[in-house]
Amino acid sequence: MKKKLVALTLSAVMALSLIGCGSQGSGGNQESSKDSSSQQESEAKESQEATGKEESSEEASGDSAGEPVTLRIWFQEPSLGDEGKIADYINELPQVKDLNVKIEICKWNWDRSNLPLQIAGDEQMDIGWDGGSDFISRVNMDAYADISEYLENDPEFYNAIPESLWLGTTLRGGIYGVPTYKELGEQWALLIDKNVLQKTGIDAASIKTIADAEPLLKAMQEQSLGAMYIANYQESLKLGMFDAYDFTPYYLGVINRSDAAKVENLYETQKFADYVKLMYDWNQKGYIPEEALTDSVNWVNSQHELYGNYCLRYCSYAPYTEKNNVDYDLEPIFLEQPVVTNDATRGSIFGIYKKCKNPEKAYQFLKLWNTDPEIKNAITWGIPDVHYRLVDGQLEDLNKESSYVCMNWASGNVMLSYTTVNEPKDKYEQYEKWNQSAVPAADLGIVYNFDEVSDKVTNCTAVLEEYLTPLILGFVEPESGIEQLNQKLKDAGVEDVIAAQDAQYQDFLQDK
Image 1 (cartoon, helix red, strand yellow):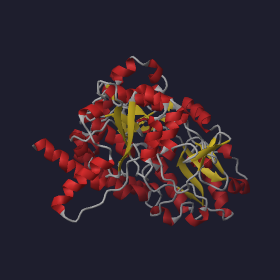
Image 2 (cartoon, rainbow, N blue to C red; image 1 turned 120 degrees about the vertical axis):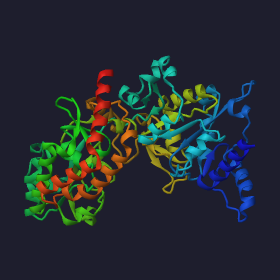
Image 3 (spheres, rainbow, N blue to C red; image 1 turned 90 degrees about the horizontal axis):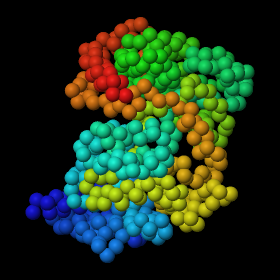
Image 4 (cartoon, one colour; image 1 turned 30 degrees about the vertical axis):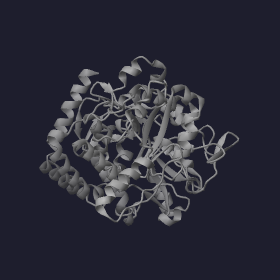
């Protein structure tokens, strides 16, 4: 009885919070009922119908007569209505029929707050998107199946994705998902409007560090050519220091790349002090506008004049970033090599849920999705000549207000995807070259555990939110500002947080 009540509750919750799954043309929004007592029953029934969940154990697993195995795949973006059509199209492809599976495309509509309840219940869930710290938490909650045994016997698939990406999904001695193969790391750069650069007469090749940008800023100021945009959040630190340090979670600890010996407190390093002094100097000289303290500015925009004419901006770079969604020419100025970080490897992952009744079939479909361009492009872009057409080998969207969307960066092997008509044809070749040039972070593959110091992490994070931004944008006198920040962090328990990180890092180094 208890199990039935959980299932009924789940169905009602899902009817309210999900748009649903698509297969055999099914899908669509659920309607609310005014009567709360009958609402749960009607919504449970509607959710079951809309998601194709006429679900017996035979359908979920395929019957002995060779019926296709149903696999329900959960994505993170909203439904726009055509998921059923896409699923039907994919299910008719010969390679999918040969695998003897039938997929359903399910969407969370961004909100996954009910996911723990969903995973614990009877809802059929076979494959699902995850990423970052949420992925780690769910692995620790035993939500995903370990696929390392499959991969050990399948070098073809394992070698189709760089090993550094597999490291990101390796926890507790197992591999708990298939990472999205896209750009592998992070690279911080300055982007300058080429017209502005030309007017200043500054050679971009002369800028090797952020401090080297001062002559450019001075020339821009003298000619009223705009200002520099430095982000008003913690990641702006990477612009000034990412060439020297690997950052650990919460922007508290760093590992010096020169020796990679230990985790140390970022805010007590000389590098941090030098950066703050530079920003203060620039602020005094008028290179950093006052609104930078509060404004959030997109680094690329076709009408950059609307954003205070920020003609020099910092960004996290990937190949052809300077060509994305801009109608003017940008010059990237690189401040470091690409670095493969834990965040980058865990940014987008599809795992097989532990409760999946056919994990081997789910694994085989994940392999197909990540090695077969036809499957990848169908899931990402939809049906040829319905949702898109090819123009000289590149994709042109046929629906400006598309009835189907699946974000390319979060759905399988990006390297197999079509480029769009507004992208360079060699985009993914450049991604490959860029990936090969990336260097691994010293702690790549580690999973830090903050359980014993979680309250102190929370306290330190609150301190950074209050004191860090004005300091790193040059609005606070450096010496007193750094002293105050470090005292507040010590009071919040930063020394214990750094000690916990370093102890785990030392164990990680011994096990490597």
